[in-house]
Amino acid sequence: MPNQPVREIKTGEEVAAFIKDPSPAVLHFYASWAPSCEQTNQLLDDLMAEVPLSMRAAYIDAEALPGVSLNYKIAAAPTLVFFHRGKEVDRVDGFVPKDIQKKLILVASRSGGQEEESSDPVPPAPASKKESLNDRLKSLVESHRVMLFMKGNPERPECGFSRTIVQILNSHNIKYGSFDIYSDEEVRQGLKEYSNWPTYPQLYLDGELIGGLDVVKEEFADQEFVDKLPKVETKPLEERLKELVNRSRLMLFMKGDREVPKCGFSRTIVQLLNDARADYQTFDILQDEEVRQGLKEFSNWPTYPQLYFDGELIGGLDVVKEELLDTHFLRQIPRVRLN
Image (cartoon, rainbow, N blue to C red):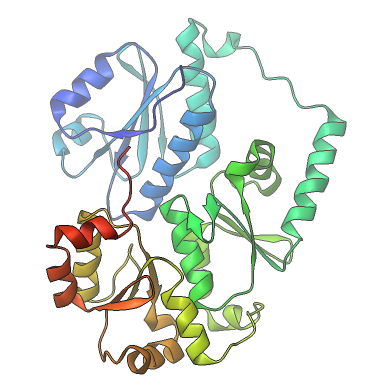
């Protein structure tokens, strides 16, 4: 039976029950304000799906449960504490992917009654097969000057990190290729070793790894870096605006992005759409002055945020508030399915 994704634990009683279970487990002491904690949960999700041994994973808000954090001497987030038979057997302080992966596999190996020393090593792949895969990976990362390996595709990203990096590239009008790592398990696993980078998305420039989302955000804050990237040929502004408002059935033009809104109105409209489980994309108008000014005239609407449905303007925050109270409107818009 496959392992379950990392889940959130919210009470001390749940923590006690989680630890009491004798099977191998990892508990992530998390902080909502720390990007590295989100990366840690993403890495845990990937590892839980890939490790063929039984393992449980959960996370708690370290600040919301200070007694538990104090009991386990948590000094910073992220911290991962590994348990077996109800006792702490190891830990990793900070986002250190190699250590997390290594210790998770070692602790999980105890589920079959084996200790670390007696676990059977995984045989390495034959040299010829590995060389062939590396040749293929090299060809993929060099297929475009800017190459993105992501979950899903730019039209339909399948995780928040991939969605955000696509929005960054699109808002800067970057010309890039992409590869859906869900479409090829050999590439998904092989690229982690090839790049020495354990999570996705991964962005490459001229065949060299730039990094994941956090690194890309930092690089795109440097205008010299942005200037050297290949750009999509500029189209007439009106044609470009038509394409942008139709990029998604539900398209929000805002200050910032859905993960980091940069004004109160944008933050509120994102919360409303998220609460309604709306399936939408965003465009950060602070990243493109031409779009920011041109869309005001295009839509005959002078302020932001602006929400579009099937290419037609719905309006700003007040209009959207009213529309979301209308059950007929809610039935029409695309919505995220509940698992």
